[in-house]
Amino acid sequence: MTDVMTEQTKLIVFQLHDKEYALEVGNVRSIEKLEHITRVPKTPAYVKGVINLRGVVTPIVDLRVRFGLSSIQDTEHTRVIMVILDDKEVGLIVDAANDVLDVRTEDIEDSPDVAGVQEADYVAGVVKLDKRLLILLHLDKVLQAL
Image (tube, rainbow, N blue to C red; front, side, top):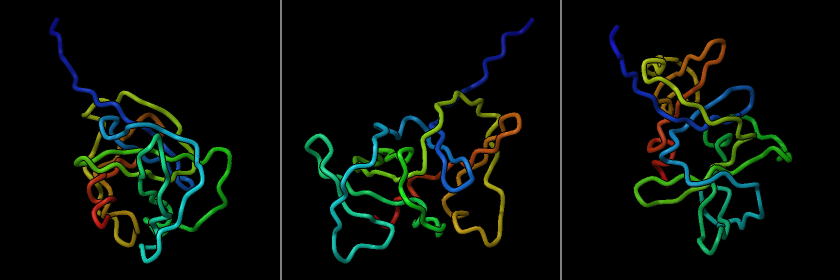
């Protein structure tokens, strides 16, 4: 009998429109309820503004707008996922934060070439779990223009 170690990665799963997306936990600082956002003039439409979270002024990005999806009214399920990348903290507005999952790295497939899909540039891979497909985001590309 051989002991085969399978590498795992931990993912935060969240909802946008009718799809499930995922980010690696290592990039996620916290998940917050949506609070008042102060609009900043002359910023791209997907930058909703800034919030003061525990004394730190943090830019907030609406992922629906960033991906070219239709906007919806915020609900009690709307969340802000606070992510950190290269010492930059940014909040991402999502429809709901669903799960934290341990995923085998072998279950993550390379990003498929999907012509015409708005968010295709931001996709790092696809995670297959039973009947679920999770779109793993390339955080550095999502935050590239900030």
